[in-house]
Length: 325
Image (cartoon, rainbow, N blue to C red; front, side, top):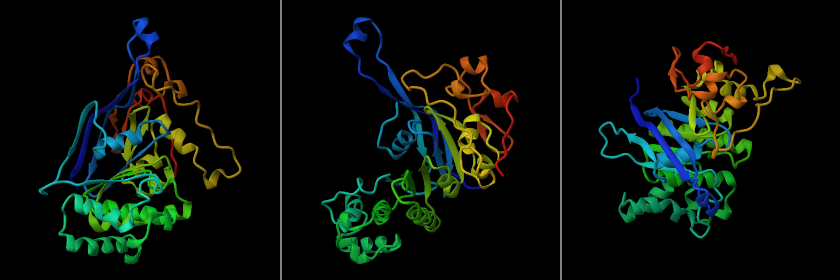
């Protein structure tokens, strides 16, 4: 059994909203958005843990917390190095058009983390840049080009090379293929899987695309309004989703056996994070909700198949397990 590379426990990130003069005059306290609210999970070394959920559920905020780009309000992010002197984290961002400085040649951008961290003597930097470009499927001569001379998929390859330049043990991938054409997405996903196998990388992968999640993940966490509602091995999640929100997400996927039949829509919309519902935040959209769901917040409970579910209806046996096989 693989060991744990990352432990996230009770992680929180709350963003206070500005206190208006009217609210102050009425004696009301300032509101806050609980973008991440008590999230916990582990990632096994050399594996990919993915987070999925609708826009605004807190996935990207959680990614920034793990990458160290934002400071948590509470909770802990702990890396285990298993005898290594230190861990190194790098992040691959969503938009390759925005994540590269247009004034830097590609070689300069890739060399920057090497020079900043003093990983190699200066004479070895350019050969390492050339090696990284070849590793991601580009040519050594591309080091002299500017970002505008590349296609979207090529720019994302450059971004991956830049991330690898820091010799990471852990990669945070925040929707790295969502800005790309479908055919190019497949190439980038295959490249990431290949690099993970070759370099032994551990990954946190963020996406709203369930097909992508199914392809790259070992384990999946489903987020809703800042909290995890289901965590499971990928196969278990896609074959037997237990939380009603996960079931709705998967039921909306196009399937060959339902061609020509209308797919059931996901009921309602995500409530405002400024005024989340009491109890289970999903209860206004859930067909199985009762009075307990409206008043009591569910916590993740272990299931025999290795999944964890935060749902009173599942715990009480009020909801059937849908099979997607």
